[in-house]
Image 1: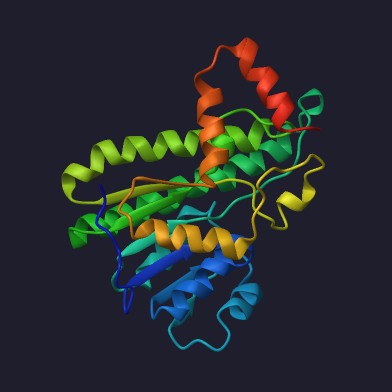
Image 2: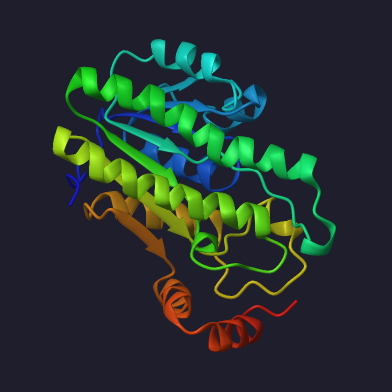
Length: 251
């Protein structure tokens, strides 16, 4: 179990990937709760729009694939309680027409970016002798989905990465969590041409994440029924696995 976060007033949080979607919604929730919030993404103007009107926000714009930029950004933050990596890239990609260049860009943001942010956060946390690192993956990391061969693979890797971090870092007093949302209505999922069951708004997803940090759980996964279905499919024989996935996600 992680330490439960129930009093957010004056907590120091760095939210990476806050310019739109779930990240923007979560940023506004944190700010309304009195968090001292640092927000990051590549798009400075979007970040400024997200935190407009709040005095407890600091904008640090940079590219998560640039390790040196991440190192410079965290130097501007004196103290941290929680670092959330939420930056993500996605394009639907049919497996009979894999675009290796585009796939590399997705891997760079979703996985390399996560490793970059994790490395600088962990270094700071170890110096502080406390801290919580949270990586936002997806239920798409549980099973292969249509047109999601690259995106889903990065999210599966992120779940595995987070599990390994927990093994290594919890004995050192650090908290690690993984967030696995289901389908959320964002500019990324608007690209999908298949039906997305149990889809929720960015605000609903942000609230689930916010409440999840109050439980102390390692994995914050939602919606419950949808994610349970995916986890069940994962352990089924593949003859059933593919039939059930085809019935659930219709392309």
